[in-house]
Length: 216
Image (cartoon, rainbow, N blue to C red; front, top):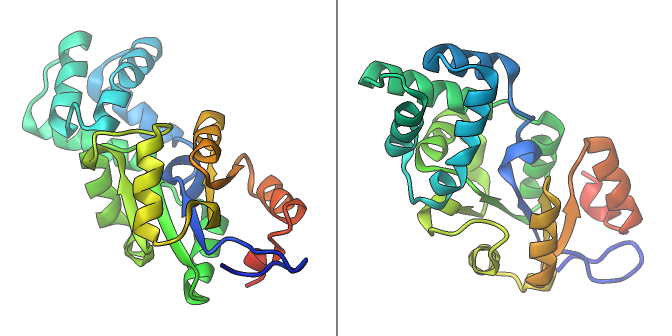
């Protein structure tokens, strides 16, 4: 573990959620494009998109069957061309980089501090992000939910991430934008911080006396 400026033990690894932590919130233009591709109105698209997202993230549905399900319930046709366009638009939706957070993650890696990604994510989304961002490969370990048929805040998915990082749970700092995932991490023995804005995140890091991790 590292040592913080008060002389206590600090985290030996930092574990990041992807959506709304390493990425920005959903991109409005990409959402509009999905609406055009499906022909669904805002309310119907939002309902169907999220109704099946957990099954997609858990691997019960894959990238094809997820959109097939939405197409069937939404009453639109789905050929290979439209499916490919929907996959691309979905990656674009969640593919806008949160630059200060990514820059901080890369700085931790340069300093030899272990970093990981723990994300609720479907197979086609994961594949799209790997193609989009070279920096994803720099993380010590990746836990993508669809590969394990588990999603946060299930305790087993935190255990998998911690084991992959090779640190004790108490030595892992987890950062997520959802309160239930933060609570799940704490229940699993990790340290955790809720991410809202980068300014608030850095303020919390200083309050928690993790200043050494912020110093790059």
